[in-house]
Image: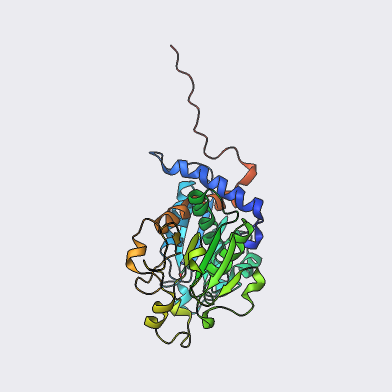
Length: 314
Ligand code: ASP
């Protein structure tokens, strides 16, 4: 794999390979010294044109735990504010010879374009409403840890599917791993022909109790140019996941950031069924596995093996 632009770049075996590697890296996170030299001397450039808390911090930590050098670039405060284009910014920063560029932009297809402009491995960390493949991978990892596997699991993705890059990547990844996916929300927030991806569609939560996993999406207000629901209160009354709607055996997921009181009630966010913090933790090890696969992969020796110390003379 040269780039990770879309979750479709990986088949089931590819997803499983990354998940398995991530599980091995999880062991590194429990060590006193949380670093391995796997990417020593490599450079990772984080190029973020959109706000991010979890994704940016976890990519930075992932690169550092692999001993890579990291440069963080945020569009605000840079020459982008003076009108520099994405292409010129990428060409300028490519002069530093990054081995990988982690890119988040509000533009669908930007990661694919950038992959043609430079020789670095490109990781799509979110391109507009299009895709967020590492979110899908960390969600598969989280569920694998929690359920032991996704084969036959029923996963409901609830809320603003239209504006969600997470929904698109996750529908594909969950199904690739053997789950049955249903998307649910108000008709205005479910894209037409979404069922062509293989999922089912519901406009009410009447059958939600059949789900093993409830995956709530954030209302993406920054991407809404018009009114998509009568009001957030009205939305919450029909689609909010709350203590009344969530069954005791259902796993609750959300990619963050959560709008408490809108798509989730505060009590379910804090309930033991919520794995939202586990998703954030998984973000680091899964992104380590992605960077490792792209920059070292099978070429390198075992990345987590502890260095053998020579036997001491008696
Ligand atoms: N953090 C995720 C994203 O960047 C989900 C969200 O923002 O709602 O797409």
